[in-house]
Length: 121
Image 1 (cartoon, rainbow, N blue to C red):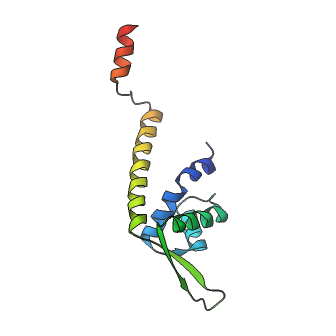
Image 2: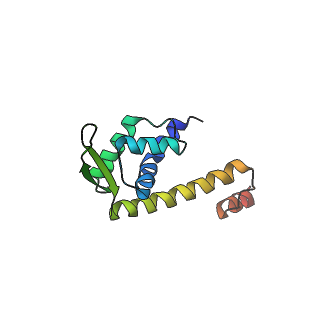
Image 3: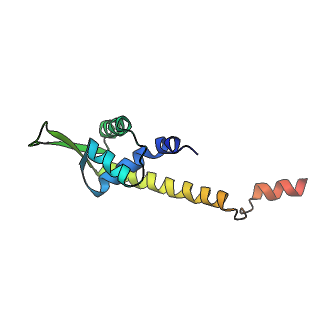
């Protein structure tokens, strides 16, 4: 399975999770995502996600002067972002459990639809 496709679906969640631990500027967020095992994450994807989350109200930002170059724009998660993180984390956990059930070979629970279909066959 191509991890870049999976990453597209969870990049918001990953960025929010990183910023929930500590505020960061763009490349810092990229570096932390890669350190967590998401080596294929692209700089442009993360910068775009930060802008979108900020414009959507999930992040706040502030500028920190830098001794060795231009100032850095830091992002921090706010109350709206924490609520979004909670919802997305729950969605990911539910999805992950479902996928684990499917790929583990564990017998699937029977549903009423399955029972009804089998009774009418």
